[in-house]
Image (cartoon, rainbow, N blue to C red; front, side, top):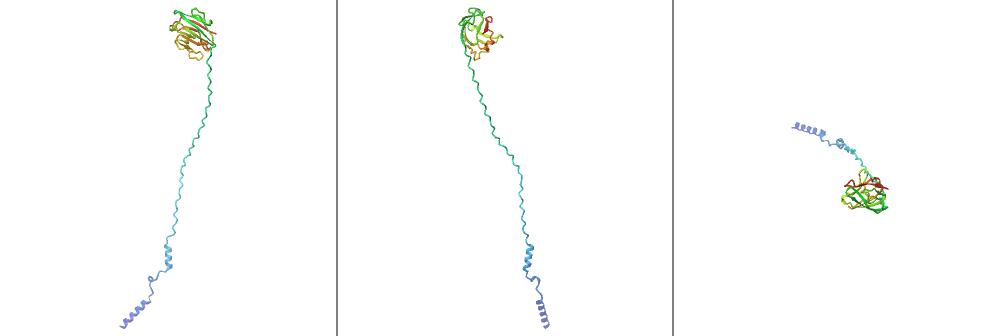
Length: 208
């Protein structure tokens, strides 16, 4: 009994003398701090913000605004003042008639300078610048005409003559009488007078 007690006491003393295990050792503050520093997440690296890539945008070619074209003001064209119509120096009246179907004759010539009266197909003499009024008593059966040497009608009662629209000649045909002014141009072309229906009724024309 006493031996057992002694053993028990030895065991207790041995137990008391055992140093505390590491597990019971309180964790040092310094150690904790070091560990925390080691495990501490490294400072966050600043994420590199991708730089904006400057995309070269094709700048549209600047279209030049067309400048206003200076329109030249047209120079006023001087309109030529039309010349005054030829003023006849004199007006001469005469009367002609037919002799059957074969000839003309001058029955009246107030100037006494155009032709012999009561003569078949006499030569008629006209003057430049003089206006002639011819009464044709032969009527519509004997149209009177003045022609060129190539038979071109110059003035005619039944055809379109070359000088009928000439302002200076001023041709008038009222059916019974005709009137015209002898211009230099007409004078240069005149060759003969005629009845356009009967070729034998024809006579020469002179101009002075």
